[in-house]
Image (cartoon, rainbow, N blue to C red; front, top):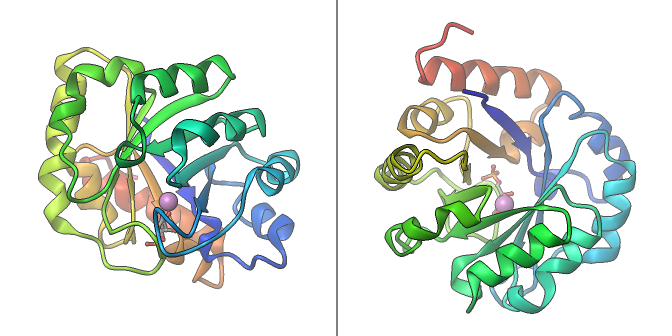
Length: 223
Ligand SMILES: O=C(CO)[C@@H](O)[C@H](O)COP(=O)(O)O
Ligand SMILES: [Co+2]
Protein backbone atom coordinates (compact mmCIF):
# COMPACT_ATOMS: atom_id res chain seq x y z
CA UNK A 1 0.00 0.00 0.00
CA UNK A 2 1.38 3.42 -0.95
CA UNK A 3 1.69 5.82 1.97
CA UNK A 4 1.68 9.48 0.93
CA UNK A 5 3.05 12.39 2.93
CA UNK A 6 1.45 15.74 2.06
CA UNK A 7 2.96 18.70 3.95
CA UNK A 8 0.55 21.56 4.64
CA UNK A 9 1.75 25.02 3.66
CA UNK A 10 -0.47 26.50 6.37
CA UNK A 11 2.63 26.21 8.57
CA UNK A 12 5.00 27.55 5.87
CA UNK A 13 6.29 31.09 5.45
CA UNK A 14 3.59 32.77 3.34
CA UNK A 15 6.05 35.43 2.21
CA UNK A 16 8.29 32.80 0.59
CA UNK A 17 5.98 30.14 -0.75
CA UNK A 18 8.04 29.23 -3.83
CA UNK A 19 11.11 28.31 -1.77
CA UNK A 20 8.92 26.67 0.87
CA UNK A 21 7.50 24.43 -1.89
CA UNK A 22 11.00 23.59 -3.14
CA UNK A 23 11.91 22.47 0.39
CA UNK A 24 9.28 19.70 0.30
CA UNK A 25 9.91 18.36 -3.22
CA UNK A 26 10.45 14.85 -1.77
CA UNK A 27 6.82 14.76 -0.56
CA UNK A 28 3.96 13.29 -2.59
CA UNK A 29 1.71 16.36 -2.82
CA UNK A 30 1.49 19.74 -1.16
CA UNK A 31 -1.60 20.26 0.99
CA UNK A 32 -3.16 23.69 0.47
CA UNK A 33 -5.66 24.81 3.13
CA UNK A 34 -8.27 27.21 1.75
CA UNK A 35 -10.25 28.90 4.54
CA UNK A 36 -13.00 31.48 4.06
CA UNK A 37 -13.43 32.98 7.55
CA UNK A 38 -16.99 31.51 7.69
CA UNK A 39 -16.79 27.71 7.57
CA UNK A 40 -13.80 28.14 9.88
CA UNK A 41 -12.70 31.30 11.71
CA UNK A 42 -9.43 31.51 9.81
CA UNK A 43 -8.90 33.08 6.35
CA UNK A 44 -6.22 32.08 3.84
CA UNK A 45 -6.06 32.12 0.04
CA UNK A 46 -8.26 31.72 -3.04
CA UNK A 47 -8.11 30.53 -6.66
CA UNK A 48 -5.62 33.09 -8.08
CA UNK A 49 -2.97 32.18 -5.50
CA UNK A 50 -3.70 28.46 -5.87
CA UNK A 51 -3.23 28.84 -9.65
CA UNK A 52 0.24 30.37 -9.18
CA UNK A 53 1.18 27.73 -6.61
CA UNK A 54 0.22 25.01 -9.11
CA UNK A 55 2.44 26.67 -11.70
CA UNK A 56 5.56 26.78 -9.50
CA UNK A 57 5.14 23.71 -7.26
CA UNK A 58 7.47 20.75 -7.95
CA UNK A 59 4.74 18.33 -6.78
CA UNK A 60 0.94 18.22 -7.26
CA UNK A 61 -1.49 20.30 -5.20
CA UNK A 62 -3.92 18.66 -2.75
CA UNK A 63 -6.43 21.45 -2.04
CA UNK A 64 -8.48 21.24 1.18
CA UNK A 65 -11.46 23.60 1.01
CA UNK A 66 -12.78 24.81 4.34
CA UNK A 67 -15.36 27.08 2.74
CA UNK A 68 -19.12 27.49 3.12
CA UNK A 69 -19.77 27.98 -0.59
CA UNK A 70 -18.35 24.60 -1.61
CA UNK A 71 -21.07 23.85 -4.18
CA UNK A 72 -20.46 27.19 -5.92
CA UNK A 73 -16.69 27.50 -5.70
CA UNK A 74 -14.99 24.08 -5.54
CA UNK A 75 -14.73 23.65 -9.30
CA UNK A 76 -12.68 26.83 -9.65
CA UNK A 77 -9.88 25.11 -7.67
CA UNK A 78 -9.86 22.20 -10.12
CA UNK A 79 -9.66 24.73 -12.93
CA UNK A 80 -6.78 26.46 -11.08
CA UNK A 81 -4.69 23.30 -11.49
CA UNK A 82 -5.18 21.30 -8.28
CA UNK A 83 -4.67 17.57 -8.68
CA UNK A 84 -7.25 16.90 -5.99
CA UNK A 85 -10.01 19.05 -4.55
CA UNK A 86 -11.44 18.15 -1.14
CA UNK A 87 -14.68 19.77 0.02
CA UNK A 88 -16.40 19.33 3.37
CA UNK A 89 -19.50 17.15 3.59
CA UNK A 90 -20.99 19.70 6.01
CA UNK A 91 -20.69 22.46 3.39
CA UNK A 92 -22.23 20.69 0.39
CA UNK A 93 -25.92 20.12 -0.27
CA UNK A 94 -25.15 17.89 -3.28
CA UNK A 95 -21.87 16.03 -2.69
CA UNK A 96 -22.28 13.53 -5.53
CA UNK A 97 -23.04 16.24 -8.08
CA UNK A 98 -20.12 18.31 -6.81
CA UNK A 99 -17.69 15.36 -6.96
CA UNK A 100 -18.76 14.71 -10.55
CA UNK A 101 -18.23 18.36 -11.45
CA UNK A 102 -14.72 18.32 -9.91
CA UNK A 103 -13.85 15.14 -11.82
CA UNK A 104 -15.26 16.59 -15.03
CA UNK A 105 -12.96 19.60 -14.54
CA UNK A 106 -9.96 17.23 -14.47
CA UNK A 107 -9.19 16.87 -10.75
CA UNK A 108 -9.62 14.09 -8.23
CA UNK A 109 -12.61 14.57 -5.94
CA UNK A 110 -12.50 14.10 -2.18
CA UNK A 111 -14.91 14.58 0.70
CA UNK A 112 -13.85 15.72 4.18
CA UNK A 113 -15.55 14.99 7.49
CA UNK A 114 -15.25 17.12 10.59
CA UNK A 115 -14.62 15.11 13.78
CA UNK A 116 -18.33 15.04 14.70
CA UNK A 117 -19.49 13.98 11.22
CA UNK A 118 -19.91 10.20 10.83
CA UNK A 119 -18.78 8.26 7.76
CA UNK A 120 -21.88 6.06 7.66
CA UNK A 121 -24.14 8.38 5.53
CA UNK A 122 -21.41 8.45 2.87
CA UNK A 123 -20.51 4.75 2.70
CA UNK A 124 -22.84 4.02 -0.22
CA UNK A 125 -21.37 7.02 -2.09
CA UNK A 126 -17.69 6.09 -1.80
CA UNK A 127 -17.32 5.16 -5.47
CA UNK A 128 -18.00 8.80 -6.34
CA UNK A 129 -14.79 9.89 -4.59
CA UNK A 130 -11.06 9.38 -5.06
CA UNK A 131 -10.33 10.12 -1.39
CA UNK A 132 -12.03 10.60 1.97
CA UNK A 133 -10.47 13.04 4.44
CA UNK A 134 -11.03 12.17 8.10
CA UNK A 135 -10.20 15.31 10.08
CA UNK A 136 -8.19 14.40 13.17
CA UNK A 137 -8.56 17.92 14.65
CA UNK A 138 -11.32 20.52 14.39
CA UNK A 139 -10.54 22.32 11.12
CA UNK A 140 -9.29 25.89 11.22
CA UNK A 141 -5.76 26.00 12.57
CA UNK A 142 -2.46 24.15 12.44
CA UNK A 143 -0.57 22.92 15.48
CA UNK A 144 -3.45 21.19 17.30
CA UNK A 145 -3.26 17.77 18.98
CA UNK A 146 -4.26 14.58 17.15
CA UNK A 147 -7.67 13.22 18.20
CA UNK A 148 -7.19 9.54 18.97
CA UNK A 149 -10.98 9.29 19.13
CA UNK A 150 -10.96 9.43 15.31
CA UNK A 151 -9.11 6.08 14.99
CA UNK A 152 -12.30 3.95 14.95
CA UNK A 153 -13.78 6.17 12.20
CA UNK A 154 -10.63 5.69 10.13
CA UNK A 155 -10.96 1.93 10.67
CA UNK A 156 -14.64 1.85 9.65
CA UNK A 157 -13.84 3.85 6.53
CA UNK A 158 -11.00 1.47 5.58
CA UNK A 159 -13.31 -1.52 6.08
CA UNK A 160 -16.01 0.03 3.89
CA UNK A 161 -13.49 0.80 1.12
CA UNK A 162 -12.04 -2.72 1.26
CA UNK A 163 -15.45 -4.44 1.44
CA UNK A 164 -16.60 -2.50 -1.63
CA UNK A 165 -13.38 -3.32 -3.51
CA UNK A 166 -12.74 0.37 -4.19
CA UNK A 167 -9.52 2.30 -4.75
CA UNK A 168 -10.36 5.26 -2.48
CA UNK A 169 -7.53 6.86 -0.53
CA UNK A 170 -8.07 7.69 3.16
CA UNK A 171 -6.45 10.93 4.25
CA UNK A 172 -5.93 12.18 7.80
CA UNK A 173 -5.28 15.82 8.61
CA UNK A 174 -4.45 17.43 11.93
CA UNK A 175 -1.90 16.64 14.62
CA UNK A 176 0.08 14.20 12.44
CA UNK A 177 3.61 13.78 13.84
CA UNK A 178 6.18 10.99 13.93
CA UNK A 179 4.47 9.89 17.17
CA UNK A 180 0.87 9.80 15.88
CA UNK A 181 1.24 8.81 12.22
CA UNK A 182 1.81 5.13 12.99
CA UNK A 183 -1.54 4.85 14.80
CA UNK A 184 -3.34 6.54 11.90
CA UNK A 185 -1.65 4.19 9.39
CA UNK A 186 -2.44 1.13 11.48
CA UNK A 187 -6.10 2.20 11.63
CA UNK A 188 -6.23 2.38 7.81
CA UNK A 189 -5.16 5.84 6.64
CA UNK A 190 -2.79 6.04 3.66
CA UNK A 191 -2.45 9.79 2.97
CA UNK A 192 -1.02 11.94 5.77
CA UNK A 193 -1.14 15.72 6.01
CA UNK A 194 1.46 17.30 8.26
CA UNK A 195 1.94 21.03 8.72
CA UNK A 196 3.85 21.88 11.88
CA UNK A 197 5.63 18.48 11.91
CA UNK A 198 7.27 19.41 8.58
CA UNK A 199 7.52 23.21 8.42
CA UNK A 200 8.13 23.54 12.15
CA UNK A 201 11.39 21.61 11.71
CA UNK A 202 14.78 22.94 10.62
CA UNK A 203 15.01 20.28 7.89
CA UNK A 204 11.63 19.68 6.20
CA UNK A 205 13.04 16.93 3.94
CA UNK A 206 14.33 14.98 6.97
CA UNK A 207 10.97 15.47 8.69
CA UNK A 208 9.18 14.01 5.63
CA UNK A 209 11.47 10.98 5.73
CA UNK A 210 10.91 10.37 9.43
CA UNK A 211 7.13 10.59 8.89
CA UNK A 212 7.42 8.04 6.05
CA UNK A 213 9.38 5.65 8.26
CA UNK A 214 6.97 5.99 11.18
CA UNK A 215 3.94 5.43 8.91
CA UNK A 216 5.52 2.29 7.42
CA UNK A 217 6.33 0.94 10.88
CA UNK A 218 2.67 1.55 11.82
CA UNK A 219 1.53 -0.96 9.18
CA UNK A 220 4.27 -3.44 10.05
CA UNK A 221 6.72 -2.60 7.28
CA UNK A 222 10.40 -2.26 8.08
CA UNK A 223 11.27 1.07 6.52
O1 LIG B 1 -6.69 21.65 7.57
C1 LIG B 1 -5.91 21.89 8.46
C2 LIG B 1 -6.33 22.66 9.67
O2 LIG B 1 -7.65 23.00 9.55
C3 LIG B 1 -4.58 21.30 8.39
O3 LIG B 1 -4.22 20.93 7.08
C4 LIG B 1 -3.44 21.90 9.18
O4 LIG B 1 -2.62 22.71 8.38
C5 LIG B 1 -2.59 20.78 9.76
O5 LIG B 1 -1.61 21.31 10.59
P1 LIG B 1 -0.87 20.42 11.69
O6 LIG B 1 -1.94 19.91 12.64
O7 LIG B 1 -0.22 19.26 10.94
O8 LIG B 1 0.11 21.34 12.30
CO1 LIG C 1 -6.02 20.69 5.77
